Image 1 (cartoon, rainbow, N blue to C red):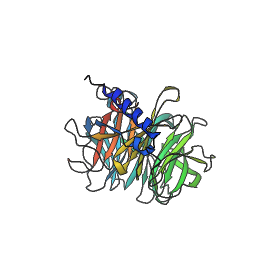
Image 2 (cartoon, rainbow, N blue to C red):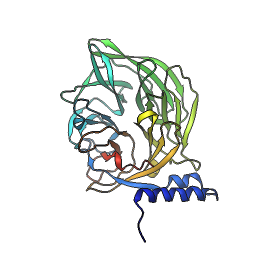
Image 3 (cartoon, rainbow, N blue to C red):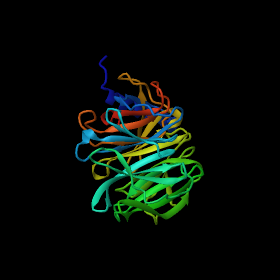
Image 4 (tube, rainbow, N blue to C red):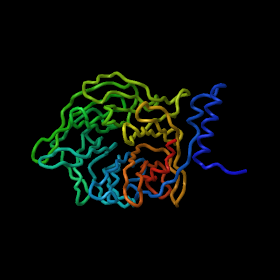
Length: 350
């Protein structure tokens, strides 16, 4: 019997399951079908043992995409910068940094710079850095010690409506604060508090859609919520997916990431830590697309217990010509925790 191409085989399986659903198959059964992909690169292990690595952010180098970097948090001591071969370029022992995010094009003095923020649990502060284009390393540009609520997760939002840049931070208690970032002069960045609301129970992973003005946050035992990202949006929300028998996630819901496509296309991605899968949703209507796992391959171990993730469909040179998906590995066979890099074209975006 002739074999189906893997892509069509996946479609057939999903169609059969959807048809079976008319006979009483729970929606979560569809989410249980996962394609396996393999990482092609892994980063050097974190310097600290135990539960250290947490969240990555991808910086796309505008001068040479092949020289892009992965910035990863060490929640037991600092922040690391890696090249696309996984080699550590810099380590900043700046405190217990939990989540990291970045945005390019921030006006600082007479320059437009890429700004990086991280939630520093050592003192509950906003860590703020500028990326040096020549060295690819980070420089601290925080104007002062900016104290927030009890830090757990964090992410950034660049408003297409106003051009302003914001930092979101959330706590284990389910509280969220939004801060506006601004040029404080002398090459420094400050922040002002502009919004606060409650999600419910423990939160961490979050991501903002700059084009659509949306803020997504994972309530770990419940699911993914969508809010308005503008500071005046209030607390009105929509449940994107749940971590129970009605949904495609398994508690804990951890990292969230966005991949932008043309004309509103692209994907929201979630780390479903409870079953070691990654769920994909369409950006526009947030419809569920499918789930995948990162298995062993290319001499690199499988990925499990993932906290943070990030992804881009931008070409990053020969190693990742169609982009990359990056995931924290909670159980790295090669030693301390690290990050795994998967070519984006391998991710099953049916």
